[in-house]
Amino acid sequence: MLQVLTGKIPYHYYVRESQVLYAISKGIIPMRPNAPVVTDRQWRFMQRCWMPVDVDEPRPRADEVVEFARQELVEMRNSSL
Image (cartoon, rainbow, N blue to C red; front, top):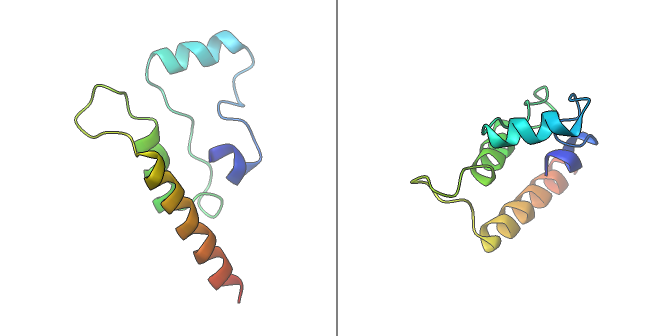
């Protein structure tokens, strides 16, 4: 989702793959892009997707991801009318 919205791969600011792997192993999520590119709602949803598996709040289920994407598309369509 982050890559689709920004056009850049997550962790694009790291030069080496080992830096990306280290960040992921430490639970460091990608940096948030500037506001109009990613809304607060989208960012919160992405953060839920990046949650570690063993925490209290579960990651979104596949059907939740589909519904979120559907809602985003409807909102985009409505805002362009």
